Length: 157
View (cartoon, one colour):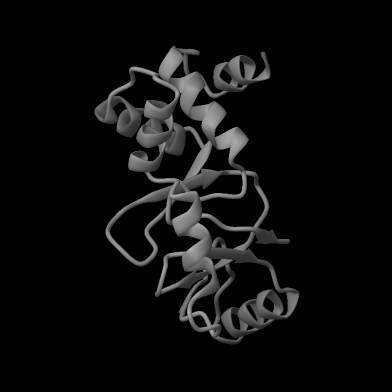
């Protein structure tokens, strides 16, 4: 079981809740998930893992570098696997849909601006908040159909 070894490398024991949560992220690589989303997914599979445990596991995974935490349009934290590749996000303010993207021109421009102002970028995050240009929002209906979570996305890396 590769997940068991991945957890061991981070210094975390391979407990059932950790393995279940990690499996959800591995199976949903293209989504940003909240603790509540994970809890609902586990309920569907009749897993008996409490919301408080899920919060603890998410915090442990973030601290160990397995997950990255984001706070997009609300106070609710969402997480994604830390796959070590840089990307930015566009967040739909109508439905919460998140589109990942990477643009080399934007990256070059940010580095030029930092350098011009006497800085070297160590790390950065770009979140663009926007409204879908298609009315009604095409992602809203897709998310409603899935009724899984409001943070689904497809990456354009």
